[in-house]
Length: 126
Image (cartoon, rainbow, N blue to C red):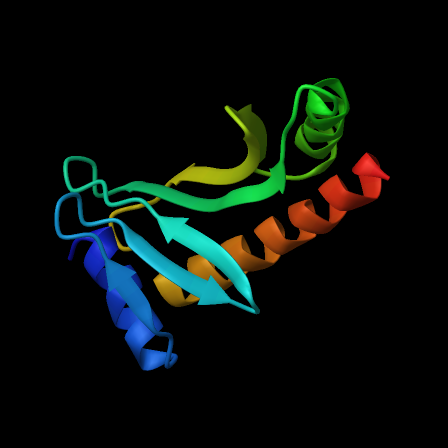
């Protein structure tokens, strides 16, 4: 079964409300009052990408500080990529899954890791 379908089934089973983008199949949902985005990768069903978008606004005045804080997150947090994209900081988890992924294990752990990275970013930003 496609990873995207496994994620949707898990979210439904856990009682999450989510929206699926009709154009690309990406899934938007909230967890503990924070926004998350699961990227649909039908062409590579073993690829898992979960994003915490726009966690911090980036301006000309704070751009260097944001990059420095993102670098600290990248160095000190497993499997997370913190990136400054345009006017915001985004957190990514990207992974390769096996043929029979246990989404009920992978997704909750990924959510916890992203939340931890979020906290570490705000700690680093001061």
